[in-house]
Image (cartoon, rainbow, N blue to C red; front, side, top):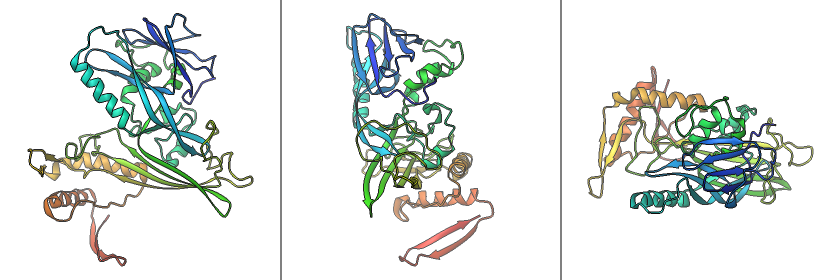
Length: 388
């Protein structure tokens, strides 16, 4: 029977010739083998003998190639954060790098790259679940095909470790091997449960009761893997329509969900129309979700660091960004329906040029806009409205 969700327990068998990954709870499942030092991947029926070291891990984060070597990054420690509809969500706490080569001499550059990566993984908030796709909002989850493996259902934008999962994904789909050779036999379904989608962002799960009714509040922010970067260094849009530092925030309230408190293993029951075991008998679990997105202004602009306290702000002609901006908003409308745009840029000072560029690109994209200024009756602010 095909495993559609990742293994929740994996043993690593290390030897001089390979790393072998097995699941103790699934003894009939195939063993994933990564050859050393080539990095070629294959599946083996049954366990492999001759391992010098056996250790238990929470999952495989991915495989990355640096200057001199490839490394398998494994999750060695994960902290339970809470349950969502019976599914436990975990935070990555610790990782380990398994080298494909045994290096007798240390290279300063390689050691520096490893230090940077380990620091990023140590400080970066990453979350995953073995049985719930947390890269997708609850609404998108309901539209996903449950016959696909979890990594295939994951939202490409928020599948944070997808790049370093490329070797495993290419092997699973029959694309190419680590050495560049095309795989035989089509889709290798035995590799699917070794591919663990990880989300980068923030998550908070809080459970309470209101008049004996279980209520769970959830706040999730998912950070896009496209055009991510630090402040001042990554701004604007790229040619593919990805805006810098794009985030999706989902606020969720679950009623009659008694499975949310911590403890035990997460369930694997499917989600159909918001119904799942764990709620009060005779009452269905109800989900209310509100989604917001946030990203950089979708034009070509940058803040160039000239070693002064305030970086120089540069904006290219708005007309050059029409194509990418249209791609960006087309995707927004396809995924979220009607979009209500809020301009968070300062209305005065040095950022006024960015504000005007944002308004100009929206005017160009909206066909036959009707513009008006409306009063906000709660505050003294004026709202500038552009309607199609």
